[in-house]
Amino acid sequence: MSLDVNTIFQIAGIGIIVAMIQTVLKQMGKDDWAQWVTLIGFVVILYMAATMIDDLFEKIKNVFLFM
Image (cartoon, rainbow, N blue to C red; front, side, top):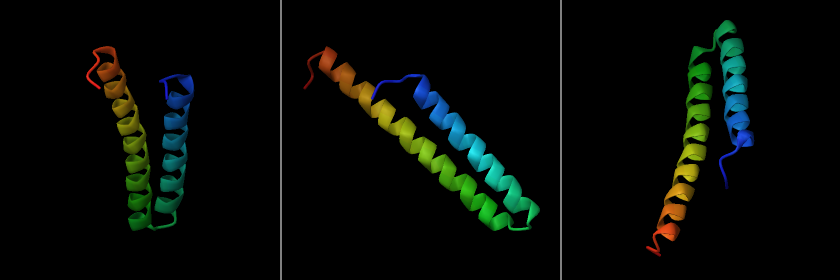
C-alpha cells in the first residue's frame, strides 16, 4: 500500500464522520457513547497508520537486503 492522496482523504473522511456523530450524540445527551465513537475512530486511524509504518519498514528492509 503506497501513501497517496486517497489515504489522506480516507483519514480525513473518518475524522469528519466521527466528529459529526460525536456532535449529534453530545447534543442528544449521550456523552458516554460520544466518547466511545471518538475512541473507536481514533483506533481505526491508528491501525491505518500502523499498517503504513509496517509497509515502510518492510520496504526499508528490502532496500538494504535485510530479508
